[in-house]
Length: 472
Image (cartoon, rainbow, N blue to C red; front, side):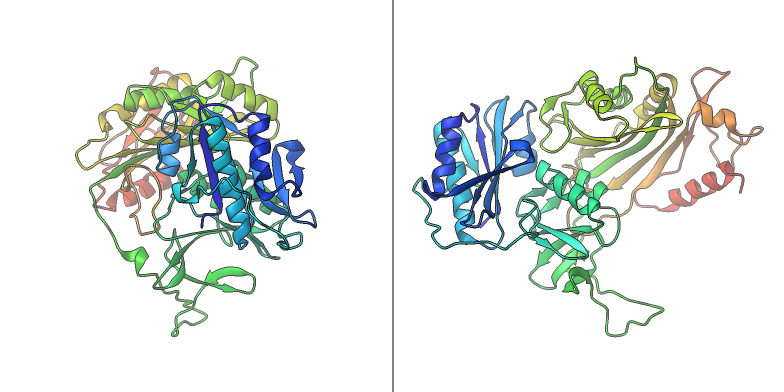
């Protein structure tokens, strides 16, 4: 049975509906709060949480329930209310299901997943208790050791939910890695992949054949000394610590789908008139013909696209960095993460963006120079790398091997070109010379690369270009 249950309702759950849901464990069940009242918890007799319920989210972006849950939601705007049960306690899972079922019955809508919707009757939890703190101290964390925090996610897409975002922050604050465990068939949101970083953080996939493996590298894993770590091959040595790769990870399915990926950094002057998100919107319009659909500080993205509101949130959090997720319309799958940081150079805006295309769709490669020019002339571009790779159209990350992207182009901003001595930026060892973007007196440069998804030679050319630009 799932650990997470979600009610999707066209009306906001009023206090009476929430109360009826909270009474799913009977009138004598203890109720606690966390996060200044943003999370309500049903607790055992010792005050330890059985079910944690987050404040309802108003979702005004179409397609988020379909993208993350594979289900149909009420017309936007609708309310997304999430409940998470304590791991390994069957009664807690029943409580979460009954809570969501009662909420959906009183506020309209439905509960996800469908098989989690339970009876409206009270769930008997007499004598049920859960683990003592600190394992239950953070609702999103299921197992806590002196090395890692482990989160179990039984969802179609492991997304950067508010729960998971809290778990990332809690683990980082404690100096721990975060390990996410999910069943086979689950995919990963790019927002989570980009946040995982390196060891000991991992995405761990349960597998019938190999037990557990790393969903991003394929390494077979075992629970060892308080963390999931790679299994060594019998013939491994200190000089060659070989790790077996899961068979499921090596099953390549070439559907013809591709992704166009762009990574770019902008450095804006610190000015009270600055509006963030304009560069991302310019690229999005050039490549899709329309702006992004929505944004948020977690997934699901809840707010209609608005650079002004995004800027307000970033300024309120300054000088602390801000992180945002931006999504597209269902007709063209796309997702971006935006990290805003205040530095001595100004306000840095770093964007990672991907669009998905089916086998019968052609990525708009001819629009790349115009996208780069918009960034270079209007949005203080520092650099940009464009790649094309064989990957899923829905832009999620599967737990199997996907080949690396092949670089199609690199762009150097006007300030970086100007800072290079002589004609180094303009005269390169590449067969095709750079294209000037912007005014002749202060140009940015667009370097076409011989990218081909079936040929890794593009990386060799990219490395030659980087060595040249660095003066190596």
